Image (tube, rainbow over all chains, first blue to last red; front, side, top):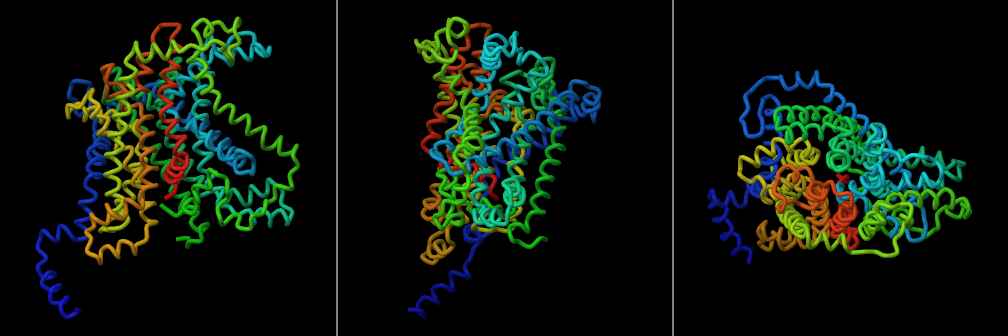
Amino acid sequence: MADVAIPRAKPQMSEASAWTQLKHNRNWLGFWFMVPAMAFLIFFLAYPLGLGIWLSFTDTRIGRVGHFIGTENYEWLWDDSIFWLSVFNTLLYTFVASALKFAVGLYLALLLNEHMPFKAMLRAMVLIPFIVPTVLSALAFWWIFDSQFSIISWSLKHLGLISQNINFLGDTTWARICVIFANIWRGVPFVAITLLAGLQTVSPSLYEAATLDGATRWQNFRYITYPLLTPIIAVVMTFSVLFTFTDFQLIWAMTRGGPVNATHLMATLSYQRAIIAGQLGEGAAISSAMIPFLLAAIMVSWFGLQRRKWQQGESND
Amino acid sequence: MTDLPTSRIDLKAVLHGSAPTVAKDDHSEGMSYLQSVPRRLVTLYLPLAIIVVVLLFPFYWMALTSVKPDEQLLDLDKYNPFWTWNPTFKHFHKLLFESYYPYWLWNTMYVAICATVLSIIASVFAAYAIVRLRYKGANLVGGLIFLAYLVPPSILFIPLATVVYQYGLFDSPLALILTYPTILIPFSTWLLMGYFKTIPFELEECALIDGASRWQILIKIVVPLAIPGLISAFIFCFTLCWNEFIYALTFLQSTSNKTVPVAIVNEFVDGDIYRWGSLMAGALAGSLPLVILYAFFVEHYVSAMTGAVKE
C-alpha cells in the first residue's frame, strides 16, 4: 500500500497553485475566518473611534458638515463649569459606587459561600437584578424615589422617623445618593457571583490548617481569602469601574442629569450636547475626554494582573 | 490575559453549592460545626436576608404597582401600600391594546435575535481561527479583540450616529443589528476561545488525517462539542442586546420602530399622574422574557459571566 500512496501524494504537493495556497495556507485560512468579525469591528468600532476623535476637533452640527477648528472645543469645555461639574460627578459616582459595590459584593459572596439550605435558589435569585434591563429597573427606582408617593417616605413617616416626604430626586444630594444606590443595587450581583466563583477555588483545608494554628475569622479572610482572590478582584473591579464610569442609561432613566446638573455624568452630558442640542463636535469632545480616564483604569488593572502572576505558580517575569 | 483561578472553576458548582472536587474531596462538613445556630443566625442568615430583600424589593414593587387599581396607587393612607386585595389587569390591557407595546416587544426581539446570531457566527469563526489555526499574529488579534471589549458604547454613539446617517440606516432596525455586534463579538469571541481551548487537539488531528477540511472540522467537530458554550454566549448576548439603550435611543426616531427600553422611557413618561401603573406594567412585561430565559439557563448565565472575566 505504501508504495502506491507515496507517488500519488507527491505530484499534489508540487502542484500547489495560488488557489490551493489560499485554501490551505494557515495564515490565509486564518484571514478568511477572521473576516466577518473584523469587518464589524473595523467598520463600527475602530473607524467610529477614530472618527469621534476627529469630530471633537471640528464644529460639526447635526445636518451640517464641520470644519477643522483645532482644540477650540476643548478650550471651550475647559471654561465650562457644567463640564467640570460632570467630571466631578462622574468621578464621585464611579468611586463611591465601585467601592461600595466591591465591599457589599465581596460580603455577599462570602455569605453565599457558606453552607446553607436553598443555596442554589438563593444564588439564582441574587443575580436577577443583573438580568433585568437597567432602564426598566431604573424606572422602578424612579417610582420608589417619587417625591410624593415614595414608599420609602411613607414607611419612614409611619415609623415616625420623618415628618415630611423626602424629595429624593429633586434635591441635589439626595439625587446623587439615589442614583449611586441604584447603580450599586445593579452592580452587586455581578461582583458577588464572579467573586463567589473565585472563592470556590479556595481549598477549605487552608482554613482548617489556619484555624488549628489559632487564626481568627478575620485573619482567615485577610491572609488566605483575600490574597488568593486578588487576581479575580482586579479583573472584576476593572470591568465594574469601566462600566460605572461610562454609565448612561441609569441616569437617563432616573434623572436625565438633573436637578441642576447634579447627576450629569460625562456620558449624559455628551448625549445632551451632541444629540439634543445638535453640537456633535462638542459632544464628541466630551466623550473623547473620557478616554484618558478609561486608559488609566485599564493600565491599573493590567499592571495589577502582571504583579500577581506568581500567585498562580507562574514565573514572575 | 493571564491565567486566573477562574479557569479552574467548576461552573455547575458555583450555582449548586457543591464545592469543586479540589476543595472537598473528603466529603467532610468543613468547619461549620464550630459555629452555633444563634451565631449563624446573626452573622449569616440575617445579613443575607436583608441583602436579598433589598435586591428583590424593586421587582415586587414593580409587579405590585402594575396590578394595583389607580385609586390605590395614589392614596397611600386609605389603603395599605404593600398589598392589594383587588388586582386589576387594566394596565396590561392598556399596554397591549392601546399602545405600540407589541410592536416594541417585537422590535426588541427581532433586533436582539438578528444581532446575536450575526455575532455568534462571526465569533465562532474568529475564535476558532485564533485558538486553533494560530495564524501569524493570532495572539495580537486576540489582545485587540479584548481591548475592543473595553471600548464603551457611550464614547462611540456620537460618531456612530454620523456613520449610521451616512449609510442611510437612520431610524431602521438594521442600524442596531449592525452596531450591536461591536458590543457582542468581543465578548463572545473571548468566551468561545475559552471553550474551544478545552476541545482536545487529537480530535481535529484525526479528522485532518481522514481528509476533512478546516471548514468540515469546524462544523462537524468543534461546533457540536462547544454547544454549551454557544448557548451561554447566545443567551448572554441576547440579554446584552435587550438591555442596550444608548444606541437605540440615538439611532431610532419613529415611535413604532423603537425598542422596549427606549420606548418606555420616552413614550410612557407623559404628564398623566396615573401613568405609574402602565409604566410599571411595561417595565415588568419588558423584563419577564429575560427572567424566564434566565430561569431556564441559570448555569449558562453564570458560566458566561464568569467566562467574561476568565481570561
